[in-house]
Length: 455
Image 1: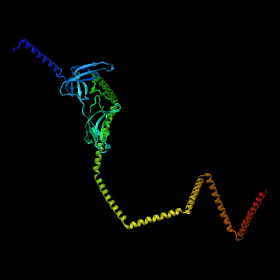
Image 2 (image 1 turned 90 degrees about the vertical axis):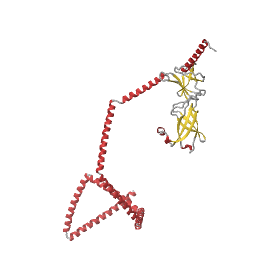
Image 3 (image 1 turned 90 degrees about the horizontal axis):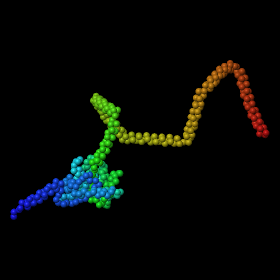
Image 4 (image 1 turned 180 degrees about the vertical axis):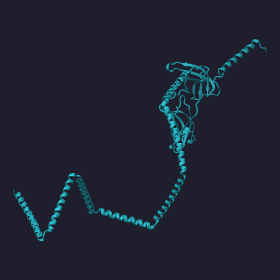
């Protein structure tokens, strides 16, 4: 059958149109097959348009099909509907969906990041009593309670020394629990620097729990969500943050410049110079010490030899002492001496316990005190000038009296026997008269006493 020219032109036009459509769809990244359509809610899409690409782990898997704004006051949002047109690609639950940009002025696209495995180390204390704990769950403190946050992929006990140095210094135990986990709850993230611990669920089964840092509050996620949506950061907000950082750095730089004044720099230079001089002097001293040691090497050797000889002598002395101590005669003499000392001590104790001896000691002590008081009184008198003058006069008078007595004695020696007898009689008569007067005085006193009593 022969085709007419009009039919040929029509078929060529249709084929050209199909090629054109396919080319346009290929250039825009569109696929002929219709894949899975997914709706994601954003507060801000940062200027993204329909037809933008969708990437998963850096690979293009689809494109944005439609953008639908929903205006509802303070609850307004934007629905971004995209389609996955690559066969065999499925977005896992709790994947992170964010809007990214190729470079500073490049094309906007949606980036999908599936949940990834993370690792945490928990110290294995003695509280497990030798049992190997099984980690069966993952929880996070959110809204004041611990909620399920994911699953445990693997857990094993390892030696602390096998950890990197920066991680090993955080633990004081010899073994740690290495736990691999992943978060599979949408719109839930474990804050950085959260504290990990094991909580006992039942016998030998534990749950890995994360506690956010102080001041960090985690809200309970919406159970209706399937993915974790990360809002885009606008370029202006990014520059504002960078500006704040720059201002903070400028303030820090100004403070550092204010600290490094000319006076401070001068002090630092002076300190370095002193340190250098000190190092040089220290080196010189060390050299001198080395020279002294070398020069006194012979003396040191002699001292060592003397010390060695002294040690030998001490050893011999110790040996001799041991021999003396081991001698039975020495032991018996030593025991006898100790017994004698003990007997003497007992006798002395008995003497000291004697009442008469104690009384004598008390009298001696009292006499000593009296003598001390007399001595003190005499010392005070000798310091009195008037007393010294009176004492001098008394001594002079005694000397004169002694002279007169001497002369009288000489005169008495010159008397005859008859004269001496006469003087003795006179003295005897005087003594008798004095005795009679004494008796008469006593009788008279008695009479006067009787008279007073009668009156």
